[in-house]
Length: 246
Figure 1 (spheres, rainbow, N blue to C red):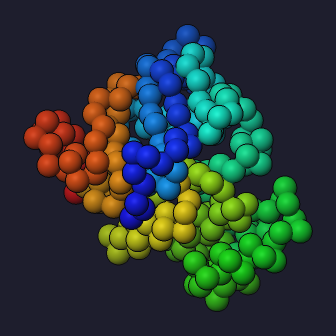
Figure 2 (cartoon, rainbow, N blue to C red):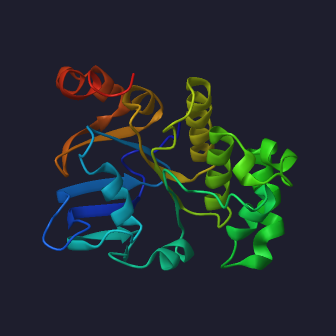
């Protein structure tokens, strides 16, 4: 886990976001979040709380109708996803997150489409973090297990050497062993200095590894504290942890 402190600069700030997929229908209703450099942030909450919508709004995939998002000192509200990648934000969607007909190595090449000359250097760096992917480099991604595909998706997002990595339900649909491996891998990525913002349905495991957690409910921030504090908070336990994945 990172050692981010209150003195660490804010890298992402989402202020009073209202956003949704359809005109006039907001999924986010005044959602705010402050993320400091090097933190691992966990976002939990019941189904329909707006967790994935929040992450997608940060990455320009859901239009923000009101409020703002900044990356450092820069306003990035509603910038396109490709521009956000250039600025140092990576995103791993929950599903359909690999090119199944391409090999593992070709998937990673796609991760450097904006800077193809950096592929060799980044491939070597990512190979140290994901040695299994180097072993499987010539295997088609579609033939991999769910956990292995998740590794490919995370590795591809890291090929542009992002400052911030957004993970949408990284453990969804995986076996317990693969889920645990994904959480360990997420913490390892965070230890390299990458700020991680993770939406996760496995609330207890998420709060165990994150520096701070946010509980979203009905499109707004209901609670925020350190992961350990939220794990012990009676209201969070009663309202959320009892109904979310153990």
